[in-house]
View (cartoon, rainbow, N blue to C red):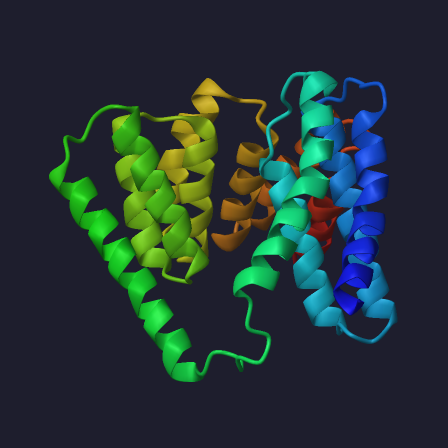
Length: 264
């Protein structure tokens, strides 16, 4: 009986989302969606801080990370309407939990304890082996074409997520050697700035800005590089020019303004 209650609660939880998906579609641009997500994340971080579950330093770091992600997101064209795809997704919201519930009743074992440290360590070792295998295959494959480039990007993001900055830098550099573009150059330049490799970062940003001189993230990173190099006036001029040309509701304004205030 209790499992039926859990299933009913799950259905009630996804019902509002299903209703939203089945409503007539409204075209929404990528930038507008990113801003809505940004505001929701900031509100959640503020609630965490006010409740005492997050101290000021952690709150500032989390806010900065959210703003950095938004600054990196492209302002894409309007997304297509939901239509039949929305109805299918809404149906899946009910079918997937029901299928999962059925599989759990058939094969589930709630009495099994949590995985011990040894098993988690073995899983981590398997992940390491998969990354090593991916790197070996990428190094052995022809270093041209979009497939190889996407493979290096995948490896770079995985290495960065595991905190291995040098490995991530190497993988991003290999992807850029196949085809150069501004957003990927910004990813690599940001890592190099964090590592103190300012000359290499400056070369990347100069090349990217020559093709995309108005890209906000590239201009922000240029200011960050100047600040890290001790050229505070140059950083101040770069960031002020970026703010002057940005729309008043640009969600990354707070990040740039805070950086300006931190300059000596």
